[in-house]
Image (cartoon, rainbow, N blue to C red; front, side):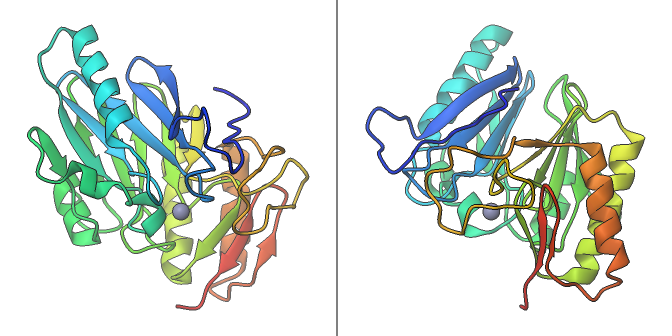
Length: 268
Ligand SMILES: [Zn+2]
């Protein structure tokens, strides 16, 4: 796991749209170049023997289909299969995570999961949203889906049983944790913590980095060049801290700056 995911500055010269890192043979972490969009989100590709799941498609004008296709093709070759179906889903439905969706519309062997909670719930087999979990078997690789509405109504976390990596979207990452629905968010953080306590989690990986390496200090919204970023992955202890901050507010959220994140309530 690289400790630095520096995404560059404004200049796109010589820089691919995504920095691609293989965590292992079936889990790929892609970080969008800052020059393409200041949000520079992380997206994730998890590949089994039969299917691959892409979580998010990037922000702004970005070529996501080319790197994803090449990763899926290479994975199929390594597994000795002719094709792997691509499923495109989302950590949540905000614009900086869905911008590349159109590149996957109407393609053979590709499923684009709907963005609202009803579609997400149906696709991942979540009986009661949000309290129940869903699963998906990619072929020798089972993922658990935890519904975590609050930042956005269709937010999910994705757990890869193979690596223990837990993808937490915009709900938990080193930055400004914007909360739209405080009641839902408080329940979701508690649900995420109880899941993380019951499972072996190797890394908590969110969709952005907005904090600096200076405790409690973030880069302002819109910052393109972030040479002194906080590390990408978060810890169980930081999730415990988030849960205690959130539960202590008892539904009356106020902006709260902590060492590694800020809880940031937003009025709808
Ligand atoms: Zn986002």
